[in-house]
Length: 354
Image (cartoon, rainbow, N blue to C red; front, side):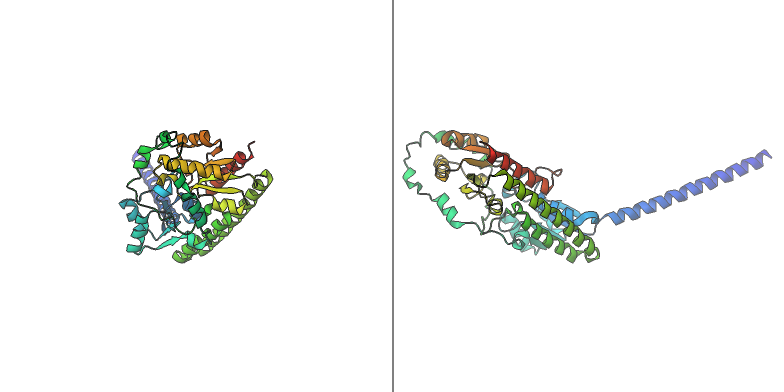
């Protein structure tokens, strides 16, 4: 009898084990199926975190592989693409970039020589042309009469401003073609909406099965951007800063200035300062541009040496507005909207100062 009970217990135990094992297999199969469903079919690479954020809003639940090559909080003007980056690009279904010489010449050469499927977004946003006369004024500016400037000796100590080593790092960097058009279109939200339309169209062409998702996501994001654009305009209009004259370090805020009718008195230099070797004569030229502008404020974006900016204050009396990041988002925790909102807040607060 005890043996019979023991056999029954063994059968029950075996049955329970079989049931548990079957449930485990079923769960495992479901998990695999879910994992397969969650992995998107596209591999998308971008040059910039800004573009990555736009694409992720359009991608939504499709969970495609989206990667930016330029790190957060880095200046795209000076990022040197590596062989590893080129491999990543070549393995992608599509590569999105700003274009018009914004990224390095080696990248453009690689794309052209390897027939990479790519989209230069600047071509689809009706970009603003740089004002060539403004460049000539800044670069020429009648500075021959400064050859034996009385203050030359005074400014000798500003020739490198503690940045000699920093600029030497860029001495071997390839040049960036300044291009005919201003690449900083992310400061015009309406143009960003145009960029998202092109992104959505490209993703649909590559993955038509999820067309509705991409189209709906872009439509929702475009509405969110449009609402944000309205809020931004109201914020700037209510701040009464449109008539306050200011000057920028380099030509990076053209779209923002034009969109909101701000009073910009030009730029200290047409190119990013990291591309310059700051000699004493070049520094004097910059001071002349500031003084001639009659601007009240100088916008100094992150990345410009504080020592040099402070020296400009001492030598011209102009008031600095600092903290704006004009080329890139700070981290993955910051969205494009967060980033622009922060920059606008810094600008409004700075120009509102008495």
